[in-house]
Amino acid sequence: MITLCSLLSVVCCLLQVTRGGYISNGDFEGSYMDTWQCNKCTMARVKQPHNGQYSVMVSSRQNADGIATGVNGLLASKRVVIKAFIKFLNLPTDKHYDMVSVMIETIRKDGKHYYDTIANDRYIRLNEWVEIGADYHFHWEAKSYARVYLKIADTSVNYLVDDVSVVDLPNNSNWQALADDYIEKHRKSDITISLEDHPSAAKDLTVRVEQIRHEFAFGSAFSLGRSMSTDYENTEYQKRFYDLFEWAVTEDSIKWGSCEKTQGDVHLTSPFKAIDNLISRGIKIRAHNLFSKGRLPGWVKTLTKDELMKAFQKRIQDVVVPLKGKVEHWDINNENLHADTFERMSGDPNITVWMFEQAHKADPNAKLFLNDQDIIKNPPEALFALKHQSSFLQSAGAPLYGLGIQSHLWDPSHLPTMRYRLDELAKTGLPLWITELDYYNYGDPVKMANKYGQFLRLYFGHPAVEGVLVWGFWDKQHWRPHAALFNGHDVTINPSGQMFQDLIHKEWQTSESHSLSVGGNVHMRGFNGDYKISVLRGNTVLNTHNFTLSKNGASVKVSSHRKCFR
Image (cartoon, rainbow, N blue to C red; front, top):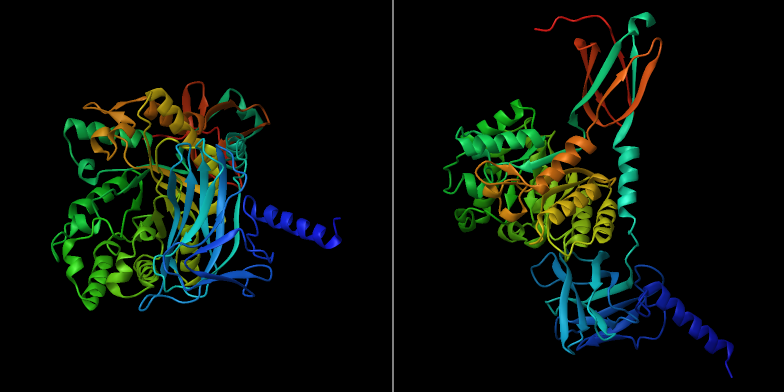
């Protein structure tokens, strides 16, 4: 006989599974805990929730594994999102934060156990609920077995866990339709062109509308050393850059380890001259980078804490101050999610906040970024950590403008999943920039070009993305030569480069001509950016007008009067 009590118990159990997706009692509101294990540790339901009434406290750990649970009913090729909220109740001695990892254990077809770390966040601070996790692809034909672990290396850390879930990845199979719809509705705006003269003057008049610059940023890392050279190869390299791109990233030339290998011996005259030359050509500059665990001069590592802070200040004076008003962006503490190098060296857990503040004081108009890797590519182990770090910096008052997503890609690159990752980052409310795009699939160059085209469409068609910058375009100046857009001595365009050319300067750039009928206007839509209108009678240009098209549209009055051109 089924009693009301037992029926309610079953219903409660089903609700717990539903809320947690493929795991049971992920919010710990159910009193049963048999689906959760604590390997050589103690766990207990406590009334200290993230949501609801309960969470679980994990303490007395003897190893890193901590709390774990099985994943139910998974099928091969299942794509899921794994999330949990964690709160540290204490920290190791002399530490201001510690790292947590999310690990998946699976038994595959060969009967062996496999372990994948899918997420890391090294900046979990005391007494704050932090969302951790990642998306994951169970793509093996495997036994129906998987476990989720939360791992913290230091066993002295006790913590709370709540709202653990393993749910289906949002269905973004229509990512391309979403992108194309956004491009049409929001990357373009209305243009109205009217004649300010007497209507009779419109006879035989034509207006030629040409976009001369995009509002959306398309650019590349650019060798400042090659940019000033006059030999054949470098001249061709410069031509291809100016023909295709409107933004330049300073690549390695102004990194600390490149320009001050010996303390006090700073070499920035040539890079600064090259930047001035780029600006004179209408190129906008993204400065990369102010501080970074990579390319750090060896002498910096020998400094005392006081000496280090003075070196930091001098570094800002050496590069940010001279470039004030010249660069649009600065990457401040590059790849900070992957190493707390400067926090440890300085002894200041908030040194990144300080770096942002000091850079902003030196150049208040430059937009300052977190720039990191393992965000959009597989595995996206720093995706949630970037959200967390950006939230921390904002709450600490750091002048953070946006998030740089490096985007070094390879196959498999699943476009619907990449759309999900962009959507997650967009929840921060911060602009996203794709800062170091490259891709190679070791296959057909045409297929590779088509994939590049998909990446560009995904990024250009996402509401939070403001720009796409590739990490080099020529195979002789590229860390992954096979990912380049141009090849060889003559800097010859390849299928991937042609894809960029066709999208940026054909499909996504406006160039139209229209007749001005008597008493009428020209109504059209164009991609946002800077424009030049030429008024012609026959083949003769009578005058030109420049305007900028933004989301509010533009109304432009033109004249039939002839202007003398010199």
